[in-house]
Image (cartoon, rainbow over all chains, first blue to last red; front, top):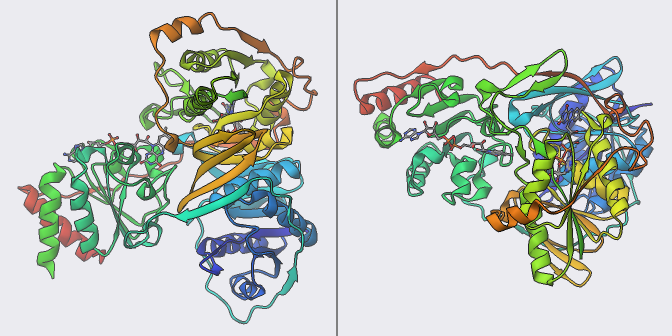
Length: 320
Length: 267
Ligand SMILES: Cc1cc2nc3c(=O)[nH]c(=O)nc-3n(C[C@H](O)[C@H](O)[C@H](O)COP(=O)(O)OP(=O)(O)OC[C@H]3O[C@@H](n4cnc5c(N)ncnc54)[C@H](O)[C@@H]3O)c2cc1C
Ligand SMILES: Cc1cc2nc3c(=O)[nH]c(=O)nc-3n(C[C@H](O)[C@H](O)[C@H](O)COP(=O)(O)OP(=O)(O)OC[C@H]3O[C@@H](n4cnc5c(N)ncnc54)[C@H](O)[C@@H]3O)c2cc1C
């Protein structure tokens, strides 16, 4: 029986939030007739429970580390065995350091295609149909697969996870296979974490090239701190060395979907929008009333940020 | 060291949204008037990576390959002007509008035809479709291991040590040659072609190979044989419902914004 296999990832010993988004996407496909949902996870069998609660009907557990970044060949061995065991004709994974390598690798080994960074998925005539963004976010493409197995990576935060349901049950099976890993990982280091993680923040204040000066990021940090949020930046600002690349929002940076996104002196290029257009409310502070960021915002102040942002900080303090 | 660099010519990714247009019936982008195509921004960095390895080793040969229309010659010329040695243009009506699986097959056949290649360098993604699939595809076709999204690398004999960029950090990996490595923007600025180099580049050879030269089967190229079929291509609609916050002074505008945000329970 065909079905959907999701590749789960872990962070700090628990299932990563994006994996629950994948399960929700797979359950939605199941509702459209795509068959059962199974999940592959690397590590302890105890990880299976939360995957089942979030929508998996069956969980395959492979050896710890085989789905870590930089281990795509090892992971592909396990994932191909899981595709076989589950009889899956759809494979979903996250657009992450793992999925970016594993998706294409599995596709070439299965003689099929992969659609990267999909925004939405649906079943149409019994087959998967995906929407993905291309041309830097200027266009959307809808694609279908010719090969038997349909592989896709999902953009983070494209789908809301389901609430866990402790009454759900499912099978748990060990997968022994791992692939031959020719790339040797010597060391992995985490980026320095400063304050709230950008991806988890309810409020994000980002600055762009129009700040004109790296020290203006202190003002962004002050506003973000006041709102209990995180500070981000456009690529133009990061490329100028004004803010660390780990805080870059956009196509080649982080994807954020906060309740409030404050864009200061950012024009709203499609590649920036690709990382924040899912924000629930956008506020633009920009001198140019015609720029894209002002057009897509809910609220906009068309003025020099140097006058507006300090006054906004004072006004917010005065509210309390 | 025998290095191949793959470069792609793409529509300028910084084309303003107002000038970006799609022919929905043909499922094609309509080239923007007066905006010339450019080299995929990551690809000069792949050329730079090759030149640094060649400089460090004091020997080696760099061949640049591009699959595309005649304008792809410009991408090859740019790499030759940076210092690469030879170019190959893969050109055939059957290569138009093919997908990344087919591109990877054609590129790998060309690399096999060049022969004895130690290292293939590519960009982390092509900024048009932005899939990042081709490097792993070329590696799989050639039977080479692949390291993606590199920010720096060093060769020691037949072993490469590569620093790569992860979502939340960095990773150091080692791989034995032959291998494929894809290069990220963190690699740093590519060198700018000097006038003398540009003149020298004009004398370097650019061969042109078609599908027959690559011994591709009929069903390996051609847009009807795509592995991923394009069902629709359109510009997503975004409505503007913006409320411009008024006020007699920036201070008043800021106060009004704070009040609006409080009213909307956003702060
Ligand atoms: C392959 C590729 C990937 C990319 N990935 C990303 C990505 O991940 N993230 C990203 O952000 N970009 C990305 N880009 C770059 C993107 O195309 C834009 O160049 C970039 O987002 C522009 O940044 P910006 O808005 O800060 O600068 P600009 O476009 O220069 O805008 C500056 C803005 O500041 C305003 N301004 C100036 N002075 C003031 C003032 N005193 N007060 C108020 N407003 C002022 C101006 O009106 C303008 O709107 C990518 C590009 C490519 C080709
Ligand atoms: C259904 C579908 C329809 C498409 N239609 C079109 C179309 O009409 N027009 C169009 O231009 N593209 C089209 N493409 C995109 C095109 O197939 C890809 O851009 C190309 O094959 C590269 O794949 P990629 O995006 O995965 O490249 P990536 O893997 O993102 O590129 C990474 C690196 O691979 C190398 N590379 C990629 N392509 C080439 C190349 N052609 N020559 C040399 N090196 C290269 C470069 O080093 C590049 O930096 C289509 C893709 C699909 C899936």
